[in-house]
Amino acid sequence: MRIIEVGPRDGLQNEALPVPTELKRQFIADLAVAGLKEIEVTSFVSPKWVPQLADAAEVLADLPDGVLASVLVPNQKGLERALALGVRRIALFTAASDGFTLKNINMTVDESLAEFERVMAAFRKAVPDGWVRGYVSTIVECPVSGPVAPKKVASVSERLLAMGCDEVALGETLGVAVPRQVKDVIAAVAHLSKERVAWHFHDTRGTAIANVAVCLEAGYTAFDASAAGLGGCPYAKGAGGNLATEDLIYFLEQNGIKTGVDPVRLAQASLPVLQHLGRAPFAKAQLASLAE
Image 1 (cartoon, one colour):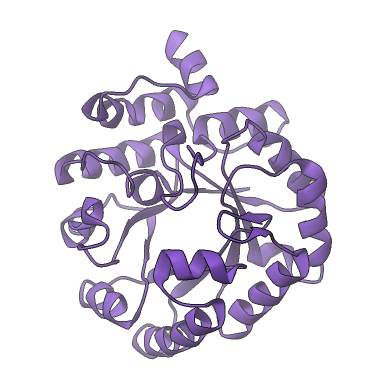
Image 2: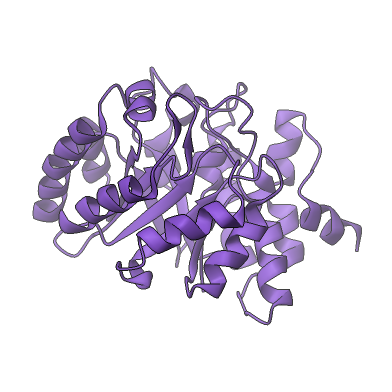
């Protein structure tokens, strides 16, 4: 089972109050101590658009040993900044909906994929043994265009894998999906290797764990999550948080799936960040662990 922790990037990128670099570094270190090995630590998007992650270089300068750290790169310029710092694992971001990509990165889906082919070629030339993830957002519904056809999700995923992505992460951006809809997406991507597909659920309406259960039953073993449920989508009204890593760990462990993650250390890892943001813990399994 792979748990990809996205809190330091996806969890913090939309906060109105920026988190100091040293606090981010401690957050990442504490997540690693808790047992999380794959962590998306920052993004090389323009500081003008995401000032919360303007300190990407500083964050990367002091990472814990043993962590498989990845960064989001939006374009060629972002890749150049990442490569200059020795980055070996990157993530690219598109969607299954033109409405969403136009709103988010000012490109159609096709335009984003054309850009990513150039980014991919440059990355593979610079880091032949590097690792690339391709995000596919809005796999069920788009905040701009409405319902998304599962076959569109499959098509974009196929194209990302064909251009050289090691895996695709299928993102349920709005947190509106229920298992029936997720099963439709699973059916559409069933021909893709399960080892090359990860799932990224938001918990806006409390259905994320139910959707994880459906994916587990289908044989998938990679899931994104964010400590304390931090994060959300700035272009999706009301999409108020990622699946909490604490809730995911509890669910997996109670189902007999060992994760190697210490739930108490995990519950504590985000507390300094939450305190800085002036926010109390709210993830259910986190609250339970803190109360023990």
